[in-house]
Length: 159
Image 1 (cartoon, one colour):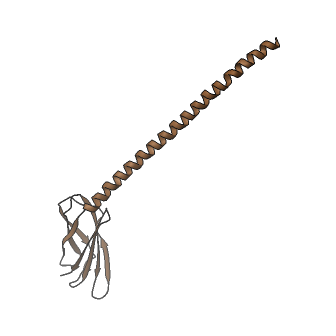
Image 2: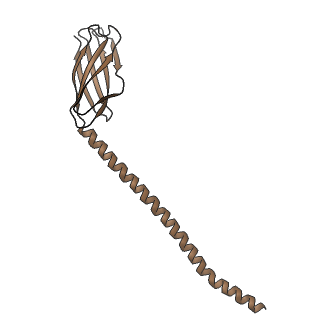
Image 3: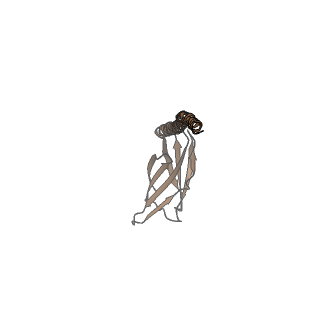
């Protein structure tokens, strides 16, 4: 009877290394597949980010705009600035103005921050100073800043 039991255990022991090898192989294949899947997804994301970054940089380089003209109202409370986009891409600009008077006082204002300018388009942007802030002879430094970090500068003498 004891010999039969020993025979059974030996048969089971003979299968044990085969089963262990199959299980170990399955675990290695599963871990390898998970790592390959992660690496493939990460490389796709990195490649897409690189392409999008390059296209954004290209748009930044071809972005072209200028302050075409500026005027002020007779009471010195408002200023109109015309921005011309002569580039190939649409832009959104923010306009900042710093006025310096002869007596040394300064005023800093900005436009609303959503001024879209289509490619080839000319828009008028109004800046509001307090009433009588601008007097003839005052100097206004205008900065037009795009969302792609490009700038155009303009110096205006109030008339």
